[in-house]
Image 1 (cartoon, one colour):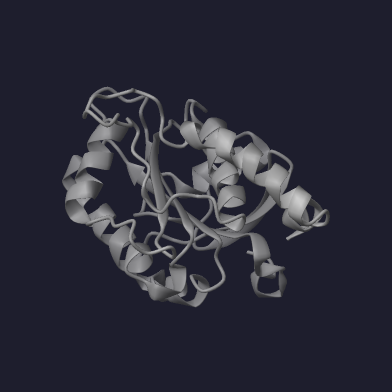
Image 2: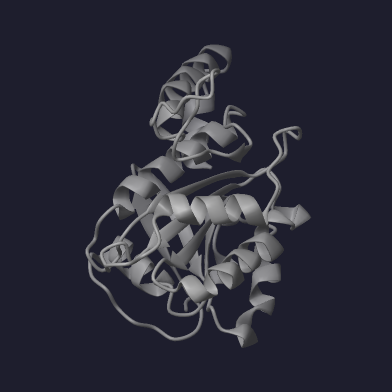
Length: 232
């Protein structure tokens, strides 16, 4: 596993999910470009869009669940991997997300990405179906500035599809959150106009322009802000 407790915790990302959801395969694909299998809990440092992230892959088995509570306090973000082909355990998977992240006071103000994995398999639940199930499971509120910023993305770790795009959006949101510009609540896959019509524009994509503007304002206010942002 390596000396996880001796690392710099400022870019910690926790990868969560039930067993066989694809957490370890996701991390090894991001790190090495190929799927490897490991047992238990381990971590890797990966580079996404020039940002170094320390990702802790927590086992999805019940005996290692206490490890989550030891790690949530320092995490800047969470990646919750869901097996989209296992509709029977979707409710259980979302319960884990709500219990260990969304209801945990130590995680307030963090970015949470839900990955609907195994989209390459026929009959898999779509990301929109996973998002709708999450809405029913948890009542999102944007009234608190410390609320989580949550979004759902489809991917296939096995086919290497959607992974890098999703993590690129994840890093963008981490930057927005650092600058205080990330919107709290659920960033839906489909946004709505004031008349209730669907734009069809991805919620996270709509914030990329805000990220660039936030960085410009931050640099004008404090010339050292950008350098600190990339270093921390």
